[in-house]
Amino acid sequence: MSSSNFDVAMKMVFESDQAVADVFNACLGKGRKLIDASMVGPASELEIGLFRHADLRFHSQERIKDAVRCIHWNPNDPDDYLLLGVENQLKPHYLMPWRIQESYHLFFGRQLRLIKRKYKDGHAGGTPAEFLSGCPRGTLLARALTIVIYWGTEKWDAPVSFSEMLRPTPIGAVRRYDPKWTYPLLIPAKIPLEFIDGTEQILKIALKYRWALKSRRRMQAFFKEHPEYWNVPRDLAKGLLEITGSVCEISEEQETVDMCKVWQEWREDGVKEGRKEGRKEGRTKGREEGRAEGRAEGREQGARDFAAYLKAQSMPVKKVRSTLRKWFRLATKDLDKICPLL
Image 1 (cartoon, rainbow, N blue to C red):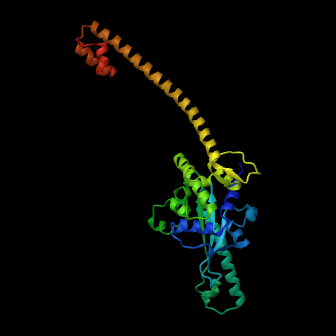
Image 2 (cartoon, one colour):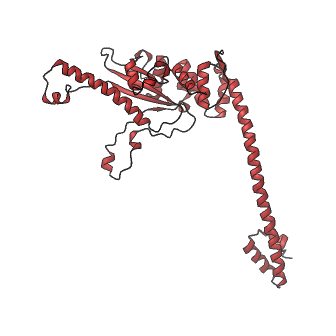
Image 3 (spheres, rainbow, N blue to C red):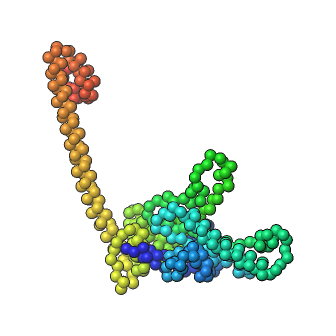
């Protein structure tokens, strides 16, 4: 299954501004409402391109699985905003801190170039320090932030700060100045259900399925308690299948997919695989038990032959038993079979 299925599903999930606001509140507000959808607006094509590292292959909106929006918290100043990126990941990305900082550098660099050009064209006098800097004192830049959402089933073991990517140093004074460059990480399987229930509809479906995929028991309870989620839009269903690494034939004519039926197929496949693994483990265990039983029989026969030899040397019974116990590590019940006291 092509990875584009996941891209299309994520594009569908984050089409609405409400979904972006919900993710922002879940990750930064821990469920508290920090922003609403009315504060979320579109980003320009240039800003989207900068956030995607100006890579022309991903410049088209059709190829972007990651949402890029502007959060406006000051209606009186259009330049006072947060450029927010939502990065959807199926696998851990071990260069994520640097990958995100590259996009920040492009975005901040563009702002600074515009400020310097405006300062130069204005022919403002300014101070020597401002002339040297190419910008007025107190220059402020619009902010940028990327939220990483990890939809995968493996553990996220990638670094969450750039300092984790640097070689260690024994000098603590140097470590204090390491660039942190951290990013917020959201893992749907760990989001409380009470918060998921309050999110935008398509986002809620995606989050709940990912939450339920954490265990078979969760999935069983999920389908039993929420029959309204059995039928899922086709494009979203394809993305959910890719998250689990499962393969299921979905016709392009289908508008919705019965995920309960799909999961039942997963379950039957899992049972078949489990039986196969169980038979293999059983054969392995049988061979091990057979070898152990053979060793035990051989040790017992050796002990009998040795006991007969010691008795032939007129060794007292108690001495024979102590010798057998020492050399063959026999239990009392085994000694009673080979060399009874009476």
